[in-house]
Amino acid sequence: MYVFDTSNDMKEPAECPAYVRPVNTPLRAEDANTALWRSYALASVNSHTNARAFVKILSCFSLGGKCTVGGYLLLSAETAKLAFTEHVIETDVVTCRSGRRGLGIHLTEPGSGVVECKLPAGNVGWDNGSGRFDHGCG
Image 1: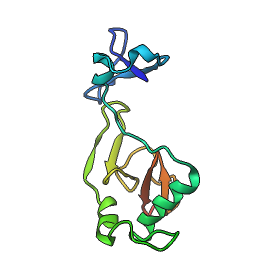
Image 2: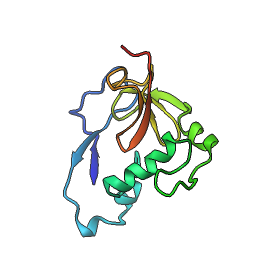
Image 3: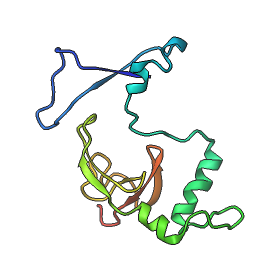
């Protein structure tokens, strides 16, 4: 659980419209379902799985919706393509980094920010998401 410390001793970066600092605090049973606990904004709700199952699910995106095991169709080809289509490009108010997002997927082509041109071309997973990398990066 993270508590966002917005005390006066913090310095806000000038280029970022809002800034919070996560402070790792111990999780106590009595904290669950309190008003503060319910007010947390989740940046993402990540999967809980093992590596083998994670790769099976991600393979469906890179294979146009078809799964590697069993060959069944989990997503239509249109949905798999839509996931890698840019839907949002903006500065993250917590990290103050620019970013491009598909449907639950961080895109890492030009304009994406911190990992731009630092990873190989192709479909790879990062930050519990899958990104598509620009083949033109040098």
